[in-house]
Picture 1 (spheres, rainbow, N blue to C red):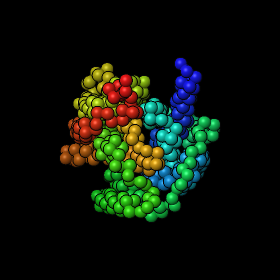
Picture 2 (spheres, rainbow, N blue to C red; picture 1 turned 60 degrees about the vertical axis):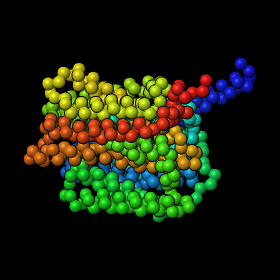
Picture 3 (cartoon, rainbow, N blue to C red; picture 1 turned 120 degrees about the vertical axis):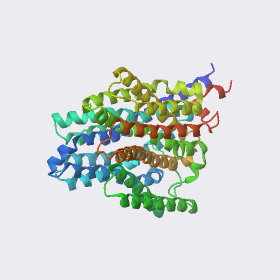
Picture 4 (cartoon, rainbow, N blue to C red; picture 1 turned 30 degrees about the horizontal axis):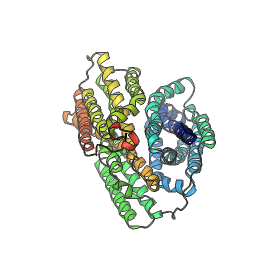
Length: 481
């Protein structure tokens, strides 16, 4: 081996190591963000008692957080380009951490709502800008591993959050569910300062203020409408008004972005086939189906099976264990079969496991339930990692910021859409029976409808070319000899 080859190998090894470190640093911050979203729900009754309000009033804290996050996501890409992704990412962690402190110190519902709103601003900037940092530091050959690393918080935090939140609320106080973010945030800031290099765009246009307000209004109203549909509060008219206004503002935003010279969001990313398919069309449908499952399963076990929350949580632990177990084989499977085959066949398995959950009964052997949930978790992890990686496989450097922002917006939408669809089917099926609470038959319909959405999205993936993302997956069929 020549000295030049040795130097190239050393440089490549250093690049791979740097990309992994950066992805791990970003993942720590993502873990804090997602953990906060899952941990807070366990302490709402205690918080209501502390603030002297009804427990139902505490839901506004979750709603305000979600809406402020939605409002500021469209701004994240431009801020990262204008002021530097590292600087904005640091700021987002700091804002989130300080807001968490004030959430924990809140003495009234008003103080808590204000702190949650500020926390939502930090959250809005964290995910898109963190992903931009990873994309800028990882070469295409390292993208699968990098994306897999920043995906694990979404798989682990939902497992740790409810258990940890219940433990803290029971043995300490609800305040520590927020104060726990302080050390995590400080560690995240220290890691970013130490390991993440500053990368800044040389030329950034002025802020597209009109585009920001139109896109923020569209996404916020759409998510508010979906949230209202899940709770089914206020009647049908407010729901239609919110969704209609959200669609109208979103259409105006897209028309605006196509007409101006320096749009806040560059919609040209949607002309990249792999990006549009994995985010806008089949990707949104697939995520909608898979995101509905964690909502339906606890209800199935508690309302359909009559299990306690602890017993239901044990089954969910098996489901998320499957999520984590798939990480070690994701890269080899993509290399062996390629993105198109993995997204289709694994998607079929994921959709099939969702439908199968609808046929579970209290008499089903525990080993069968656990095996099915483990398979569902495996396929969920594989599908999400493949979707998230292929989304950016063909995105050029100039489109990364807008593509990351658009991807975050659509993922936020698919999360609530999955819950909304599942809740709507449950409500309709229960309403036809004239009952107040769903039974096993209602859950069967919900799992079936959601599973069918997953099946249909898989068919769309067959339209991908066989070599889609081969440069990223290293699909052996298309590697040069």
